[in-house]
Image 1 (cartoon, rainbow, N blue to C red):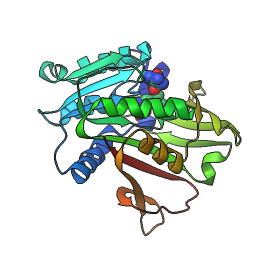
Image 2 (cartoon, rainbow, N blue to C red):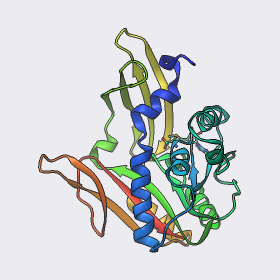
Image 3 (cartoon, protein in one colour):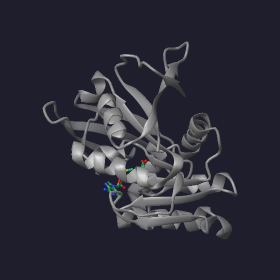
Length: 267
Ligand SMILES: C[S@@+](CC[C@H](N)C(=O)[O-])C[C@H]1O[C@@H](n2cnc3c(N)ncnc32)[C@H](O)[C@@H]1O
């Protein structure tokens, strides 16, 4: 068993990822947008492939591809595949070490680009090439699902801290730092840090140099790549003024301080 306090992928999954909730959402989105059920999923920028793994666990007819160019993340992901999946489930998942701009997989029902990972493509030319590439990987009528965030908070230099419960180890603090933002280029530098109660820290466990893309830019580039039925999904609010986590299709958003949205686009 690796030292969980030193295992940045383990801490990342606990702090950042909610694959079961994400699959609830994308299954619903796919049904709403295409009127049928998705079977084959491709998770781009998959890292440790948490969503692809959850996808094949969810239903026996589900198949998944994960694509990432980082061999270290994929080694970790493959270990999880062996640890969490039955041998039958393992036959329904393939993790590919490749650049998403070039990866070639058989046609899939749905391509995912989540946790803003496609923001690592920081020019219009690169993002357009990626979106065009995704279209070629979908079955006719397949769906591309991505997320985005924004609002004034997304441009502030900040350190946000959250307490994370680790049911298999020690609780810890997760810190999201937006360390730099250039309003001219839209480029940001963000870091993830982890800290334990005894002072042990994983400083800059993950760092991202990415571009803060806006929804109008993303929608225009999806359109330019040939996608149709581009739909933004927005969250509602609870009576206590908290985001309710339930995303619905909207024509207009709210000028919130910090918003998260999902976008679906038909290939
Ligand atoms: C923010 S992590 C996302 C991890 C996980 N999928 C999630 O949703 O939290 C971004 C991942 O994208 C990968 N990545 C960045 N650019 C890529 C590219 N051009 N092709 C393939 N993978 C890429 C990195 O290796 C990293 O694992």
